[in-house]
Image 1 (spheres, rainbow, N blue to C red):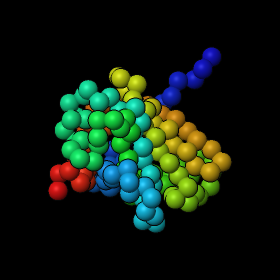
Image 2: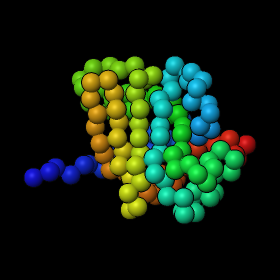
Image 3: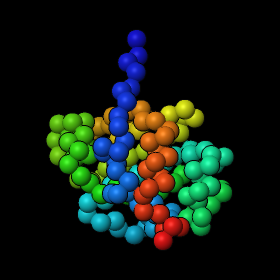
Length: 136
């Protein structure tokens, strides 16, 4: 029997105040030393939140929203729990996959990965309240 993923409270690990959306072209620039790459993959373009946040940063042809979350105590503990050791945040990626009713949060660190469920409403709140270059 397949064990279902556990739910995770997104704001406890990726709070909006520590998350910023970036333009895809900025992926070529080295991030800050405490930044962890977040990819929101296959985000449904038809949703209201997509049109609210899109502006010039997210073009219609993109299905992926890119951003960085600043490492924090809760996230560090979560990362450490995946393989039992500290990880370089520059080698860590967090992917959020849209499955219509909820998101699958996949955390990849060197030597392991772990998957959780988060709710669509949490992802919506994150995107509405984060630092977005279209709202400056």
